[in-house]
Image (cartoon, rainbow, N blue to C red):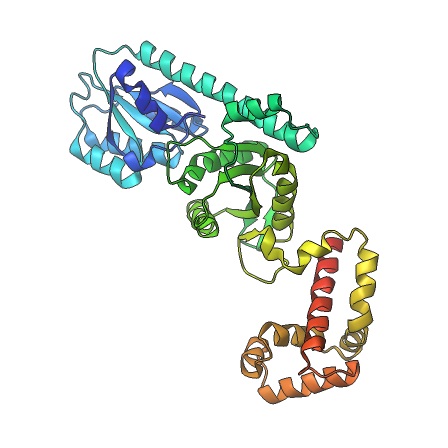
Length: 403
């Protein structure tokens, strides 16, 4: 994978000078195009690096500014301006716009041949793509082909960028299309999905303090799996939440979620922690928290429930405790199960529980007394609360996996 930052390494050979948009140097470059006619803008698929001499400008800076704004909207990687009779000097307002958008703009000396620039950039893209394809195939095989970790396999992992003894967490990002009219998620067609995945790959660099560092990832279907190297005090969840918020702010039609594994250190642990990240992603809506990201370790009791393969066994566990409440709710059209769940979540605080349920405190007291009568229990007893809380979690889990 090559981005605009890596393009800087070619500056000596190409005599390119970055003049604007340095905050956007992590933008991925998928290909290189020479463009003099803005009418072809709609043909761009995203992440292309564009070169122009400004032939279309007719000495009109506003046309160049509009050209740059449109490239940014089309998710182009950046712009190379070849100094020429049409643009003898890059205007200050162009530099300011590039800096404002975080859109990289490079100045190319007039004596440099376009064919030389094209050849150098396309070669770098192809070589980088070959390495990424090898990395993706290797990581994919570790998960699905049950590869034994030998010294040879470890050496290949290192050649892909894996660092032995580095502590990692596996992060799986999943992107879905969001229908704002009915709040439902809908499927994404392959072309749009591929573009979103490319955008994710580019934006994921913000998770790294050292933005020049390569990172290990592979994409499959609508997911990107990332091996993220962590430090003891790394605020990983905060970083991911900020990343997701920025992504959804820019791409309002799409929703992004992330599942995060426990920390691991040996390559032999990668596969099991990939499964943990998938489980975290799968049950992200199960914890009752309005979150876009969750760690496997935060699944709490659900981690244990995942090891029990038969839902029927789990159903028997929670029904033994909650059957009478469930039956009463069904026949009386009441909300005793919901009341009990919120009461436990609020640690027995009557006022906050009543506020959550939009009922009077006296109504809540009546419901709690009814629960105690039906279950022949004491809601002030810690062991009783533990058993009821466990049963409620098991019930939620079983309903979730059977839905």
